[in-house]
Image (cartoon, rainbow, N blue to C red; front, side, top):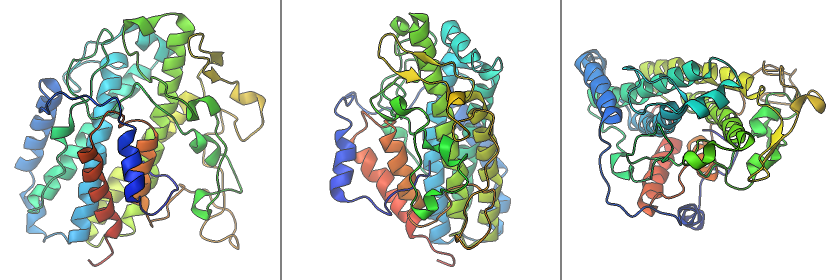
Length: 376
């Protein structure tokens, strides 16, 4: 969710973001039905029933509330995209209801690791708990939660296994930034210093690629479906490395110790997700999609900057070049962190089809989070 980028987006840039939505779905807004809403409501209800202790410990500063609300909104968006992945490629059970699975897509994901279905399920379950907890905590402290329900207007995949409900995110036109791969393997470059890292999979960073089968027509030929699964594998890590950076970036701005505790407790789970997914992405088989020409190269053929088993953060520059290198999360610069996160997700193509109102709401949430200061 966090990426190096400008501290704010201009009105022109916001308009450009909205223009990427030229395939906008014009159906009327509706609240998501069935299992997705049911799971969220049940979980939120349980948390709210247990939450009076939070209100008793004092109110939130406006800045703390703004940060929590922005994070709750992003976790809502994450839950939406992970739910789509789980419906087709994860385990369907009472913990993560909805969907019925797509055996062909599940098998393609399993090429990256035989436990992929379980990992997708568990990541989805985690994201449900993140946004419901954050919203419950806000409400327990008399603050408005993040509410994006009216923007569930994007279409679902029509592939076997997917629910036909409104979505917040679009997984069928992804442009995946894979510079996170080289960023964590470089010992001399750090985006906090303005450095630009090369793409591990250059083709993914251009064009628009599906991370899930758009319909059953995408289930063949085999290499086409595998390219979709490979895309998902790198997208999983892209999403979770964002949270890995965003939580420590925003934690530097909070005031209340309990809010700091929340960010320092949720943030490391994003890092655990990222570490899992970057390991699995390294197992994506080299291939060229016969339908689109999307190429996944052999990452182990071009030195340490791309080597697949180097998944521990390589020590790199931190705070100042005068200090010795240090193994760290990067980036963690706090200036413009929320707007950087929004820009990264927008550039990813997740919001293609969303309305101008959606972008306006998300921009306001991000600006409020970036304006938060310790003690305010």
